[in-house]
Amino acid sequence: MPIKRRQELLAFAAEAGAAVIEDDYDSEFHFDGRPVVALQGIDTAGNVFYVGTFSKPMLPDIRVGYAIVPDGLVATFERMQRHTGQMVMGAMQLALAEFIGDGDFAAHIRRMTRIYRGRRDHLTHALTSAAGDRLAITPPAGGMQLLARLEPGSDDCRLVADLARIGVTARPLSRHFTGKTAEHGLFLGFAAWNESEIDAGAELIGKTIARNLRGR
Image (cartoon, rainbow, N blue to C red; front, side):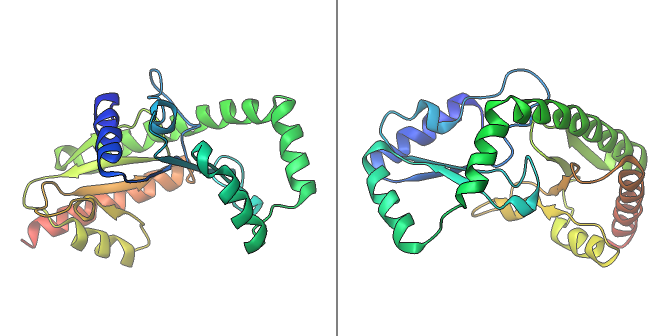
């Protein structure tokens, strides 16, 4: 969200006495311009719970997450963690601390950001080539997935189901609306795929969209 929208959300949460859970799992990867400050960084009412993970920027098997909670709830969360037994092994914590402290984590993020930027750009070009103006693509400034909007009248849920049957995973934009659906499109991940896999997937997406249009 742009900064103005973030401020509006925080004002609403403060007025309603609501909590905001900020799941910022891929914020380390930013490609263009300066990243927008996190909600937790501009929250003055103590309503934001910021959660993140090392599984996305490093590797899934590490299974280490973290939460930055409002100051008044730190002690409560510490007690909850002790009583539920959800603890990270001490050796893993020490290894992560050393990895971060030595600058190796920052170097890893820089390297992966270059790789993911290339994959983002490759997917954008591949989709444009395969689907033409049937997709309006918004290359993200950061993160690990892009949004490709479909033409008005398209059924993104049907398209996602058709793609799943041929091995292409996507999420429908329409599911992210409450009330009346305003737009249809596809959320497509790019971080886990090499260029040949991206090309193959984009070609399947273009052909499936063309078939769906003919079937209307």
